[in-house]
Image (cartoon, rainbow, N blue to C red; front, side, top):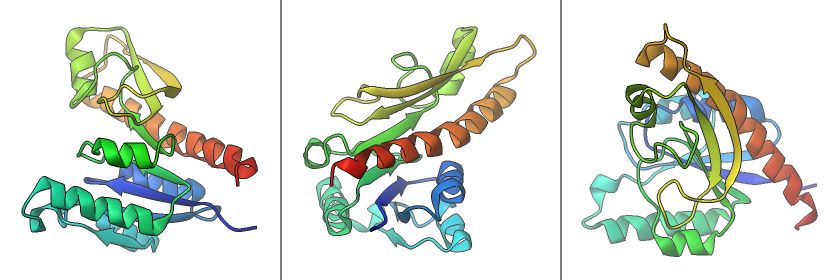
Length: 191
């Protein structure tokens, strides 16, 4: 049986990318698309021997040209699933439409609370007692797609922003590969 393929879009450090590859790299075909030549995720891809494509947004005159290049690459790859793992751009609606219910993201809060950037810091500074991680489908609104899974992290009195970030990232690295695997397994009957 043909292996399922996921394309991971990433812009930064790549710790979720690495966790996904280590958990699922033998089971699925994984390709990385990165939008920044300085992103550490590229070094992780090389170390893990994962094929990648750099589509450096700084090489395009406009955002529209960049988005079209991403769209073309995604269509060429024909992925079963697109995974946003620290991807710092919002996908245009035509990409979301084309790959409807095939794009997922992980967000470091219990959505719908603390959408957008710096969600861990937002939760910590607000003083909530619980935060967590949400895996959701991507739609046209920021961090507003259908929720697939959530897990809770209790914020202890002794937690600092740094210890909370460590707890959240540890949970992301466990939950994201598990949910990706479940989604790809559930597609078995779809093809």
